[in-house]
Structure formats: structure tokens, C-alpha cells
Length: 31
Image (tube, rainbow, N blue to C red; front, side, top):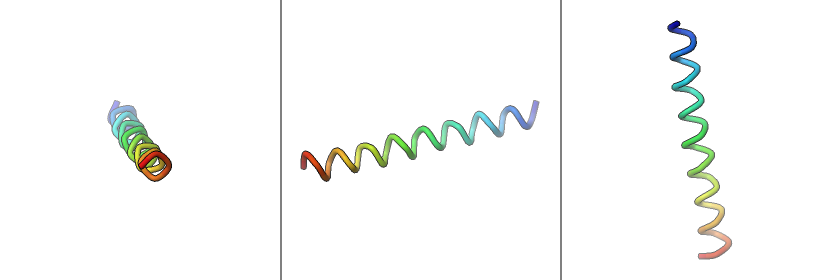
């Protein structure tokens, strides 16, 4: 159970970080 929770947290972090990177890329291209 704990491992699954940690995995979910890590996945959320990766998703947020990836989204942030994509947002930065878009800002660089379109900004």
C-alpha cells in the first residue's frame, strides 16, 4: 500500500514537472 502511494505521488510529480517543462517550451516558442 505504501509503495503504491509513493508511486502515485512520484507519478503526480512527474506529470506536474513534465507539464511545467512543456509550458516553458511553449512560452519559449510562442512567447
